[in-house]
Length: 149
Figure: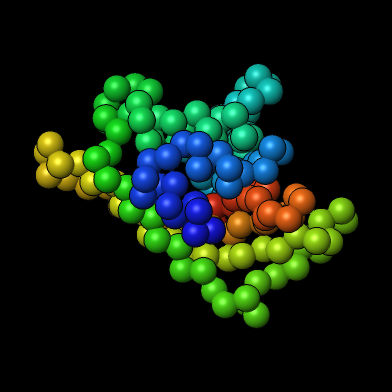
C-alpha cells in the first residue's frame, strides 16, 4: 500500500505496475457504471470493471501523457493518501480460492495539482483493496471503488 502511494507521488508507472497482480481488476460501484463504465465485451452494455492492461493505460495517461481527449495535461504533482487501518481491522476474503487473501478498506484522498493554471482536482472516498500473496510478496488483485462520484 505504501508502494502504491509512492507510485503516485513519483508518477512512476513501473512502480505502479509492480503493485498489481497480473489478473488485477478495478471494480466500480454499480451506481457509477453508467457514468464511467466501459463496454469491454462489445455487448452494448457498460461493464462494472476493467483489468490490468486498462488500469496501466489509465495510469500512464495520469502520470505521463494526460487525458486521452487532450483536455488535461498530466498533473505536475499527485498526492495520494491512504488511511490504512490497523491490521486487526483487515478482513479475510471468504470467497472460495481466496483463503490466503486479505481485504484492506481504506479511506483515500487524491489530489492532482496543476501549476500552470494554479488549479487542482481532488477526490476522496473509500476503496477496498483485495491483496493476494504471490511468492513472498503481496499484490493488489482487486481494487474496489466504494466512493460516489
